[in-house]
Amino acid sequence: MTAEAFDSVRATGWLVDLLDLEGVTGKAAFMDRVATALRFPDWFGRNWDALADCLGDPDWGPAVPGRLLVVTRWQEYAAGRPDEWAIALDVLGGAAVSEPHGTLAVHLALGGSH
Image (cartoon, helix red, strand yellow):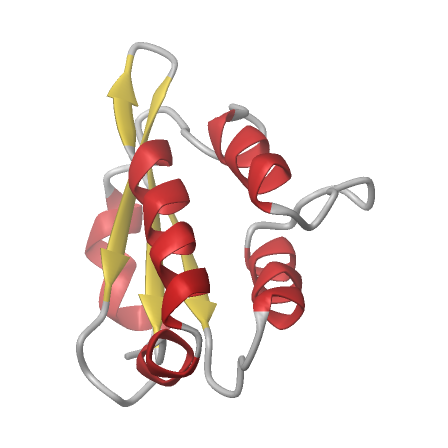
């Protein structure tokens, strides 16, 4: 999956961010990848509550008309750290909103390529 695949989404004004989790084996690496993919501020606390807070902040989460977060190559992390992955899904799912201040959609890509 390449960024070009989302050109039509971008053409409608949406932001598209790719979160590639290849090689992620724990929470610290997961948080680092999210921080990089979404260009979080340096003060991002790299914990689940901080992730939820940033994902809900219009500067990094929902956008107008919308932001699409595409999560790729997540399967190894999910299998290796199922408890962490369950929390990550809960946080991502809770952040996926469509409100007047913006939309955040989260897509888990099922394919293995990037």
